[in-house]
Length: 153
Ligand code: RB5
Image (cartoon, rainbow, N blue to C red; front, side):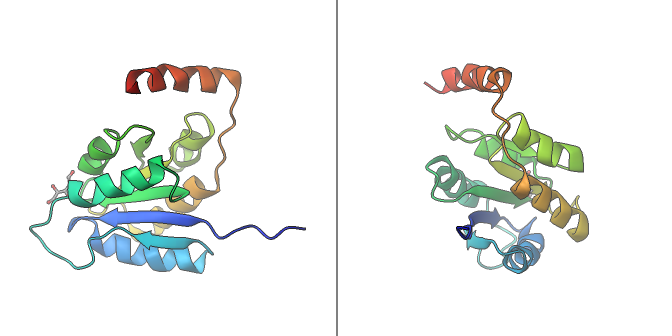
């Protein structure tokens, strides 16, 4: 049997999500993923989430990382910024069903979390559910995604 390659997972946060990002990096390592930290590397209350989210989103769009996690205070700004990058399908996730169904039906490749909203344990469960989910790829899913892709041309 072929051994599965360790998946690279991009992760970033501004000051609103910094603490959760640090915890998630340890969590990813403990769960046999390879976290790639796109910053912030230190806590700076004056930093701006687009400075971290846009490079992260570009990395997932070109498949430099398998999937990605973007964290800001609410998760809202991170989600808005990430979805501006072609090829990124990002969503702000707060419940378990959406964490996996967003991948299964919509091929979500970037999860956004609110560091001031979602607790550590919930965030861990949401992230694991997101990372372990697979796109089903049914004709109806592909057709819907194509309608979104058409906008990106
Ligand atoms: C930063 O204070 C905060 O506005 C940001 O982290 C985020 O919540 C934006 O959506």
